[in-house]
Length: 239
Length: 289
Image (cartoon, rainbow over all chains, first blue to last red):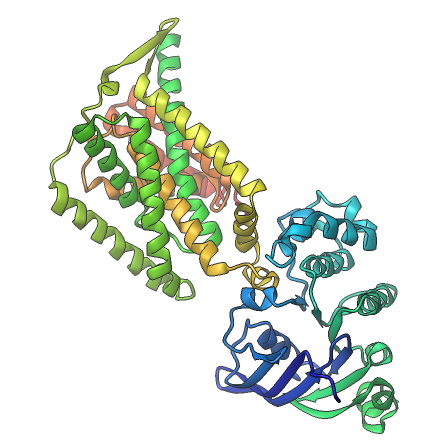
């Protein structure tokens, strides 16, 4: 571990209305890694992503991005650092056109100058969005909305993208497509933090993984190690 | 007879456009920030006083006074939002209600201290000028107000559709969490939106200063007017606010002709009740801005 991690979460505590969502979570992400965080519903996965993004304020702990503590920074400042997000439930702008959704994602200072080129890149990756660029995002299918959410994140030329359950609610075929997209972005040297319930698929493409249970990290290791781990197999793969 | 009706309807349409702009200000604020600005009427009255004072002191043309009032009220709205309203955005509705009633009373109080309770008629010569076209007489003041309003509405629509801040405003209205996720500076957008809303009120107020004597207590009338307009047109809808404004403008004018000038407000409330019964969401009840 000679390299300095891009992201280090240290002893993160988050609670809502007095009940703890995250309990002393620590994890590190190296540049260009694909890290999986797996865990059941309510394990604290979304809280983890939202506190890194600055949307939820942690009660205590540090979130260090490239050597700088970003706790207390606003979500828009954190986006400017190059941390993008594909949220749970997609959260696209339903009444806005597909293109407006993407353009808004590409309007951060860090990427504004190359907006048109980035737009072309997204349309090349998702020709479907190109066909529907004038349609309101709310009229698209779930899978297409997921593409909008991913495209929107790509538009900001992020160094890291956090995916919150990208496969949720998608058909098995579309889920495969989504994991391919995640892998492709990773091949393009984007650091990925992938939070998933789909344990087998995510661990098989991840460099390393963390298992989150009741707001704490209970297990960590390489993707392959976790896949062959007895507890993981029993608890999440039903084997 | 037909000529009389044409006269009345045209004058209703002209003033209706201004009502539409006032309502637009209210609806933009509601659509994005989800607060109802009960002080909106007091801001229209500030516009009236800007029109009155600049005319009296400097002989400023109404149209310039309207621009000045728009800029001034943008500043007031921007500061008010970032200093006060922003702390109440997530509070329950009844708390917001009390806040805005308080702000409205405060503004009316300031106007009372500065100008006193007496109606102040505009010195603008525009108040008395008309043009005639094939027997249809049109107030110049109304015509100018309607034209300036149309230009401003078109500019606002273009701003919302094509500019970066316009896109941000529409996005924030659509999905606040989504906005935070893509890095939209929500507090700044809220302040700008509130400023735009109050600027609409101030601009419209100054434009109609040749038609209405400035008086602090008009605030309630204008707030209610904006409300009726917005609800008839559909809460949160840009187009709805305009259609609502035109409807109310024509209704008032026709009421004054059919019954008595004092009946005009009564008839627009009657219209409100009918719309609420038949179409509770208004003509264009939608979540778009």
